[in-house]
Image (cartoon, rainbow, N blue to C red):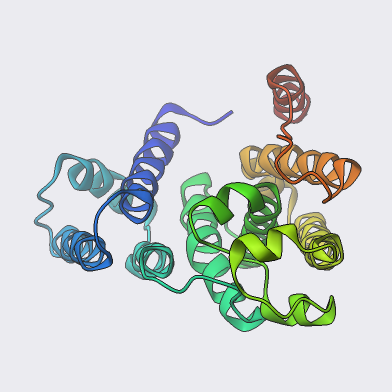
Length: 257
C-alpha cells in the first residue's frame, strides 16, 4: 500500500514500539524494567543529537530525517509503556486511561501519519481518535489475559457505575456485573471510531489516500469490536479475532480505491 521507503520507516517505528513494549511485558522487577526504559530514553536523546547507537535507533534515524518524526511522540510511547511497567495499572480512572491510550496508541498514530505524508493537521486528530479506539478494543479483547498478568484496564468510574466495588482483577473478571462495565467501555470505543471516521471524511482526498493503511486497521478493528459485542462478556476467555482471509479482503478493498 505504500512505497518502500515508507514501509521501511513503518517497520522501524513498529520495531521500536515492540522493543519498548516487550520490556513492560517481560520478566524482572519493576525497577529493572524502569531502568531498561530509561536506557531507551537515552537512545532517543542520542537519536536526536545525531548519535544513534543501537542498530534499531540507527534505522529510525533515516525515518526521522526523511519524514520529520517528532521526538515527543517517541517519548510519549515510552511514557505509556512505563505506565504498564510500573505496578498499579489496575482500574485507572478515565482520565488516566485516556492518557495511557494517547501515549501507547495515539502517539504511534502521530508517527504514522507523518510517514504516510499527510499535509492536513487534522490528520493528527484522526490518529489520536483512531489510536484511542484501537487501544480500547485491545483492552476489551484482552480482559481475561490482562487479569492473569495482574492488570485491569477497565476504568474505575465504569466499575463503580456497574456496582463493582472490588478492584482485585480476578474478582472483577468473575463479577456478574462485568458485562455492564465492558458494555460501557464499548460505547466509548464506538464513539472514538465514529470520531475517527468523521475526521477522516473531512480530510482532503490526498490525505485520505495516504491514510489507507490506517483505514485498513480501522476497518479490521471495528469488525473485531463487532465480534466482541456479539460474543458478549459472559465468557471473556473465549478468543475473538478477525480471520486472516477477511483482513486480506479488507486490505485489497481499501488498497484498490
